[in-house]
Structures are given as structure tokens and as C-alpha cells.
Image (tube, rainbow over all chains, first blue to last red):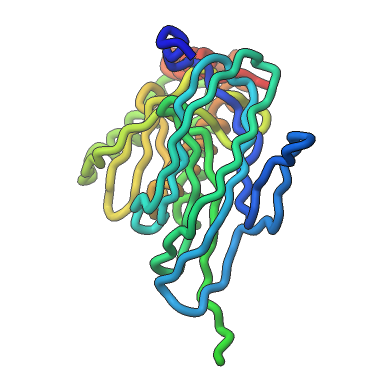
Length: 139
Length: 135
């Protein structure tokens, strides 16, 4: 990618999907995305804790160069706990771009709502929520 | 969350759903609404963003909205600066989601009522048409 091509595009991509799951992986032989263990809430016995999570993001209508940011944020405190940065180039507006990210164990300091925010070229595209609920099961 | 939704809904009912026959009435309503907001204590949060989606499958944003955030009476307020539209919530996320719904509803309502709009609402509609397209 040349420097000239790295001018951030002003075309706003359409966020088709954001899915939180245990494992998001592309099949090396077919290129198909496999999502295992999709969830949007977790029960936690003891805080603070941490959990590995994966994120699958599907974008379309992208045209040009994009710097992407995925922010893992605790909604109540608005504190950004983790961030993943990347970039991609799309030369076909009609094509879709799939992004799979396998995060290391992400901190969950307390109960409440967390979200993965998707940003492209500093534009907010959308988010996926994760509700963390204290587990009532005791030993 | 609930409070944010209720506040947004009230605002929507009052703005586009107002009796559109009388331009003076609409202006009066807008002045009342914005005047009231400006009287309250408002603390700006150092967080301005570009909003590139509306959470509405019917609509697509082609030019982003500039959004500023304030704290007002303990609530977070998200303001789409170019169109003076607001979203409310207990946190940044709720306020932004409320604003997204508000903008989408405003766009749809102004489209429906386009023959009956006054000068100010026509200006707002023009901005919305530059930024939003139907899918």
C-alpha cells in the first residue's frame, strides 16, 4: 500500500454485523468465517475477573483506505479497557470485509454493561453490548 | 436507559409532530425547547465524535454528523451540532443511541411533512438530506 493510497476515505462503511463469541476463525481452506459460542451476556461469580473473547465484524460499502479501531469500553464508567487498531483497504464498494479478532483475556472489573465500539477513520459505526451479570450460584 | 428513551420520545413528539400549519407556532416551540435547554447548567465533555450510522435499517449516513457531549443535570446529552438535535441517557452509549433514533425519526417525519415545513425545519431537512439516504 503506497502512502498515496493511505489517505483516509470519507465514504462511511455500513456495519453489517458485530458478534461477540468464544472463537472467530477463518477456515484456511475455504476462507469461510466460523463463529463458535456466540453470546451477549455472561454470568460471573467473582469480580474482578477476565475472559477471552472474540469479535467478528462485517463491513460493506467501504471504498478506499480505513484505519479501524475497536474499543472495549465499560459503559457505566465510560472507561476504555482495551483497544485493537488495524487498517484495511477496499477497492470494491459492493464487496464485504470481514474482520475477526481474538482478544486475549479481557478484564471485567465489575458487573454491568460493556461494549465493543467499532470506529473507522474516526467515525463511529456501531457497537455490540455485553451484559455481565453476577452469578447467584454458590458453592 | 428508560429515562433516556422517554426524554427522546417527548422531544420527537414536540418537534416534528407539532401543528405544522403555523410557522410562528413552530418557531415558538423550537425557541421554547432550546431556550429551556440553554438555561440549565451544562458541562461540556471533552469528547466530540463523528457519527456514521443511525441504527435504522431504512437509512444510511453518507456524511457523518458531528456530535458533542455535555453533562446536564447528571445526564449525558449528545448533540448533533449541525441540526441542533439531542439525545439523552445515563451514559455516553445511551445518549448516542437516543440521538441516533432521534435523527432517524426526524428524517422520516420531515420527509413525510416536507410540503408543510417552515424555514427552519426546511434548513434542517436540507442538512439531513445531504447526510442521509434511504436504502
